[in-house]
Length: 291
Image 1 (spheres, rainbow, N blue to C red):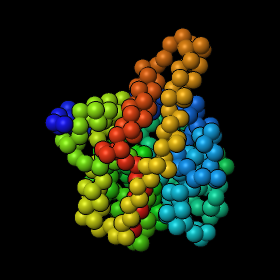
Image 2: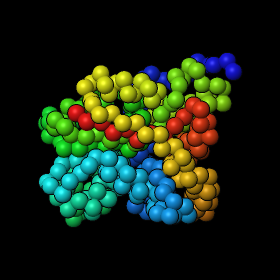
Image 3: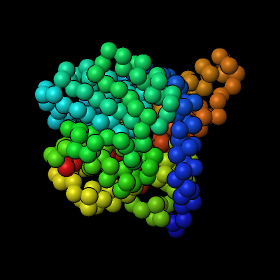
Image 4: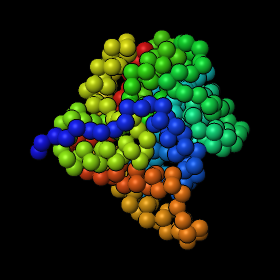
């Protein structure tokens, strides 16, 4: 099918403001998705995770990402680049007793509420831009980014900053959706789902997975391992329509209206599901690499 040119704004500043607004006003909605405030999809393992219990799969994604960081029981400092409400941080801090964690987000709501949830843990959420943090170079033992770098289009800037703050031999693990081909080569259906996904979730773009690897290599990352985990993630994605329906009915019953940001979030979730059905165009990957 003939490809169509993608028309997504290149205005980074406008997108940043929309993203902050989305998370300031719609983050609380994620409690319906996850009681642990895991603001991402899950990882399914037969006979270990429960298909009917979403948080079982969402927390397993946390576990899979942390496992690839090879965290030890020694004193370790972890950066969560785009931490949301700190769900992954809390999971990590429960599991590793000698771990300290710093998370960054641009949302005031996430900073305030996330730090309340982190009370008693050795972790803090800061209002920082993961593209340009105030962290000292070579200061973190490990860093992760679960479904966050997509907001800046998996840009070289994001990866460069992650590289800067990591200590030599520090590991970075990214879990996110990527394109399997350039956006210009998407068929009409894939392109439409992609446009709507980016618009409603305030994503700059999704990078081509092959280009992502080239970026990591160019910055100096080594031991790059790319795992296509699409079929592990799919069962949690299939929860989306049921979550949308139940959340909508709950909100309408309670207040008879939906916030604009909540509506965008729900539509973004629907187009994430729709995108996932185009398996030749989209995939979900876990990328591990070392500085």
